[in-house]
Each structure stands twice: as structure tokens, then as C-alpha cells.
Image 1 (cartoon, rainbow, N blue to C red):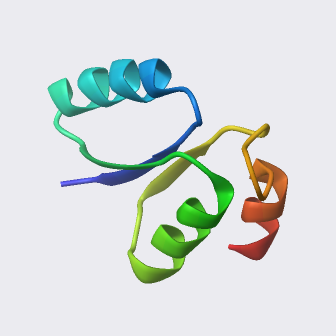
Image 2 (cartoon, rainbow, N blue to C red):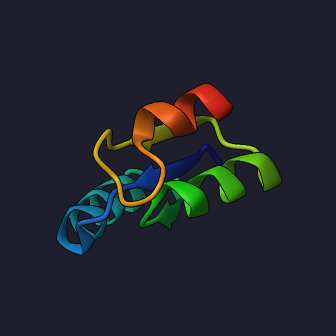
Length: 67
């Protein structure tokens, strides 16, 4: 099963994307800010990370560069 990390600070966006992707058979983890995203990205293996650019704390670009 493919594993995806969704990163967005809007719960409604996470909820909608998570539902759609789980319906298609993906395993989904989520994070609400840059620090949490970086922690999860370094502790787990993901096939894809869907990353919002404007996040609290670290920006999506900073997270991307760190990963």
C-alpha cells in the first residue's frame, strides 16, 4: 500500500484529501505545521508528501529543503 503524508494547517482540506485518498486505497498520515511534518518525514517512509507552502512555524519550502 502506498503511504502519503498530507501537510496543511486547514483541517477541512486534510479531511477532504484524506477521505478521497483513503477511498482510492492509500494509507494517509497528516501534519498541521512544518515542524510536525519534518518530524514525520524523517521518522517514517512515504511514497509522496503533499505539502502546503504557507504553514505555521516552518514554511513548506523550508520543510522540503530539510527533507
